[in-house]
Length: 95
Image 1 (cartoon, one colour):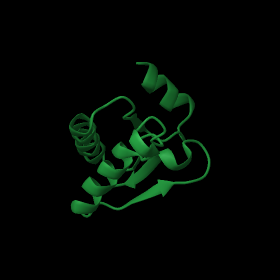
Image 2 (image 1 turned 90 degrees about the vertical axis):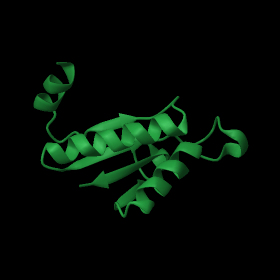
Image 3 (image 1 turned 120 degrees about the vertical axis):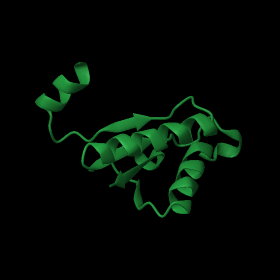
C-alpha cells in the first residue's frame, strides 16, 4: 500500500530492490524474481542496490560482482550507478 502511494506521489521514482544483508544465492533469486515482475508489468527500469562492499572481505562488493556476472551471463543490459544516490553500490537494469 505504501509503495503504491509513493509511486502515485512520485511517479518519476524508479522501482528498486535492496540486496543488503542477503547471501549471493538469495540475492540472485531476488533479482530474477524482480525482473520477471518488471516484465509482467510491461517493462521499465529498476535499480538493484548491491552495496559497495565496505563490509566484505577485502572491501570488494561480492553481491555487485555476482549480480553483474549473473546479468552478463544472461545477456541482460545494465549500467552501474557511479554518481548520485547509491554511488558505485547499485546497478540499473532497463527491460
